Amino acid sequence: MRLLLILLTSLLLVSTAWAADEAAPTAPTSPAATQAKLKFEAAIGKAKESAAAAIGSAREQYLASVQKAFDTAMQSANLDDAKWAKGEIEQVKAGGAASTERAKMPVVAIAQTRLAKAGERATEDYIRAVDVVRRQYLTDLENARRVVMSESKDLEEATRIGAEIDRAKTMIVDPALPGVPASSSGKSAAAYMPPAEADLRGLKFEWFNGRNFNVKIGERIDYKIATEFGYGSAGTGGQTDDFSVRWTGFMRAPKPGRYKLSAVADDGYRVKLSGKVVMESWDSSSDQSTWVDFTGDPQEICFEMCEHGAWAMAKLYWTPPGETDAAIVPPTVFFQTKEAAKSGRWQRPAGVGLSMVVFDDKDLRNQTARDFDENIDWPFGNCLIASGLRSNNMAIRWEGFIVAPEPGAYRLNVHVDDGIRLWIDRKILMDSWKSGDNSQAITVDFDGAPHSFVVEFCVYGRPNHISLHWTKTGGFDEQVIPPSAFFLTKAAADQAIARRKAAGGK
Ligand SMILES: [Ca+2]
Ligand SMILES: [Ca+2]
Image (cartoon, rainbow, N blue to C red):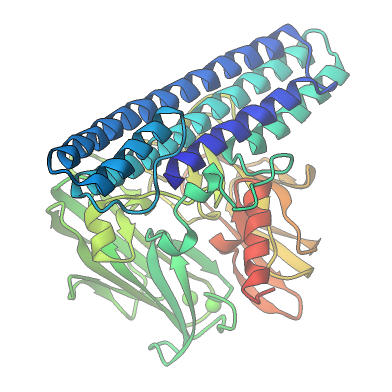
């Protein structure tokens, strides 16, 4: 089967890449880094073994089904079928791929489907396992670098470890990477990730000029209802005042129960669940709350807000059953379709967004959570950023790559309270690690290429928020930097740029 071939090809690609790399002269040599690499390779080996075992047993089951079909064909003297089954058995036993053409014999056809599914599952499991292993390796390398910096103070070794960190970041997550070209047919583990078209997370987000949805200007997918437009527009082409926006889609609570659902927006808002208005404050920005019994079934949601003048924001937050603190309603509950919400399958396509690490302290020492984020836009105020994560005396680091929609000068500005640091291409461009409003702006000349991007943020007390915006000189007014600008890996960013070019975009 093609799926198996793809899996085997991708395993091969990864192992080849690492074998070739081991000879690289720039490999770190310190004991901690060496140990990290050994541990890493052992874990990768284990992930491969388990993928191979899953595939092996699926192939055994397939062979048994084909054997059964062969026996049946022989009994009924159906020589054509028997011949086909015999050839298939020989081919698979010799290590070859199963036939991709759908077999005429129903038993085999069913077995083919089952084998394809098993192959898909094994690949997904493998990719997930590699990602976990990679993250551990990165943590170990960071620690090794810290050891080198504090003990032997060997700067060359620290640089080598830094290079290894960079390499490990891109090498593992996505095997179709520089140095590991995707095969001519494009078959690689990356090909397994759900394509962007199949990504049904999030809500439809539309923006309009006029306070009452007068003229629709644009739409995109948004991943949570918590955004700080600030003094900017809701999206390209939109006005910065007298506008309105609407999020629509489906939500499914993580567990059934009675939730205290709350909302706020500047200047007004209206929240509908299954078509019924549950909160409305169209002429004022005051917070409202209501109790909602979520059953675990998907529910249609519509959040509308209007902006009159000056500053603008919107936020949907809740207190889940058994919790005492309110938190922003998390992205994992929102889906574009009812079917997707029903399945609850919330899987991010490979390589999009930013990695997001949450720390329990302002010095970014004690990591408490590791997640992904679509963009940097958290008007959390007195809410938790997520249930179970404290929101004072903490810090967050976002990391990934940023791509501008077109080359040119951009004004990057951040609305933040409290501390902020921002690097592009490892150069620190914002550095204000102190309490209070630290909103500031810089000008960046972007070309069309991906640039490495890191933001660190800390909170001294409450309330607090961070929202990263940009303005394209001669292009568009200030807006929240949308999710489409962020990628986890350079390879993913390069692929997206190539796709956009192919689609005729910029
Ligand atoms: Ca405004
Ligand atoms: Ca306003």
